Length: 69
Image (cartoon, rainbow, N blue to C red; front, side, top):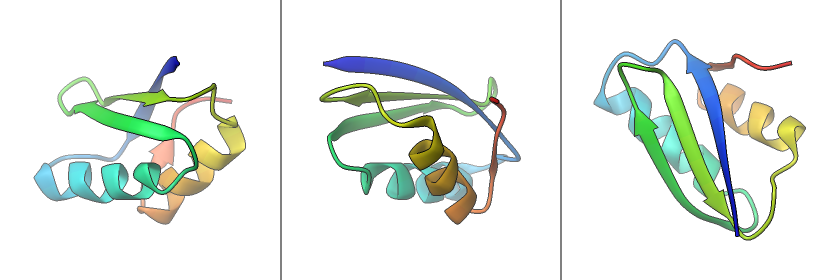
């Protein structure tokens, strides 16, 4: 089991949280997604560490920006 934290820019409401959560939940192996909206932090628990490029693509598909290299 792996837990990873990401900073996602541009989220401002419950709809943002829902869109990001739904996209991240489509990634293989994701068990859960928790979002701290004021801190712009997303915690993803998955079977194993996720590919950062896949996380970035999911966040961008939701319409937001991942704040990590």
